[in-house]
Amino acid sequence: MKITLILNGKTEDDYIIKGCTVYEQRLKHYASFETIVIPALKNTKALSIEQQKQREGELLFKNIQSSDKLILLDENGKEYNSVGFSEFIQQQMNSGIKNLVFVVGGPYGFSEEVYKRANGKISLSKMTFSHQMVRLFFVEQVYRAMTILKNEPYHHL
Image (tube, rainbow, N blue to C red; front, side, top):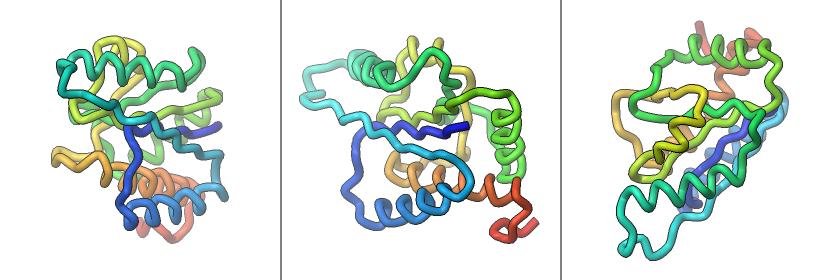
């Protein structure tokens, strides 16, 4: 199974880039992992929030297949602890899907079309994190899930 993380806009923050790179390299030992960055919208002052979400959704749909399992990282999603998230990943691996896609939305969330297409929603916390920090937190949690599944010492149970 391949795991894909789709992000809205690139980051210029060196510490986030370095941290994500570390965990993405570690993940290669366990699974095929890819990050796709959708370009941030330009000239958004002329667009309503709904128009922005609509355009971001259109860009997202260009990067997913109908067979992909789409999980939104959303504040109203299901919360997991790290062991529970590893069990979720294992269930997805066991289900036979080829590509598990997680998406970090834009600053206003997702369009209705994206919510309708989604197969689920996950919340990383009740706290609000910047879209930049979510990248690092999420990639680390995917790595942690893999080490839990392999019973390796990274996560101390």
